[in-house]
Length: 225
Image 1 (tube, helix red, strand yellow):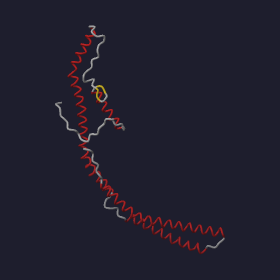
Image 2: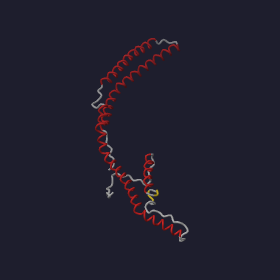
Image 3: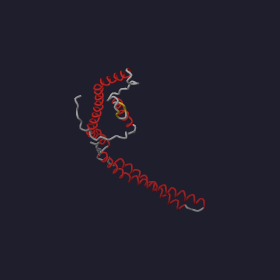
Image 4: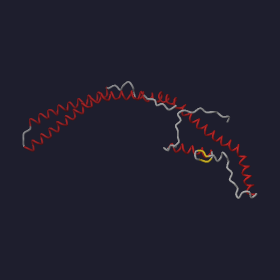
């Protein structure tokens, strides 16, 4: 069973409500921005007209007075727009879903729901991994016991062959299971260490070439041990 990704719908609902509220408030802010831009435009127009009249020695009294009146009126517009934006921001409802509701729903409902589904899957895999490793060690010990006496007998026989001149050297006698090659290592004990090494490397981004993802814990055959 693969891990199922659940959608935290309340968060999206909260964001949607926030987007609607922001859109409404944005209109008031846009009106304010437009009013300020118009005021700046009029002020620039006044400065330009005044400068040009001085530069060329012309009389722009009436034109400047008209622009000045427009500036006074536009300042009133800006004041109203600032008031409207401030009042709208204070009066606009926050929405049915609060940020506190979102956090509480996540912590008290969403997390337990995901955890209840996730924990049994991973817990079963970890138990299986533990049991497999311990089973390998048990197999190693059983192999040691099963063939240890035979290897010792072969060792003694090899020494006798050398002593009797039947061979020129004492043959190095291997243990059938202790010298087994597992995961590129010699013997189960080294193989177990290699497993932990590869797991550690994986946590740092190095995945074994022959790795296969196991979605579900396979059916296991319980032994007598």
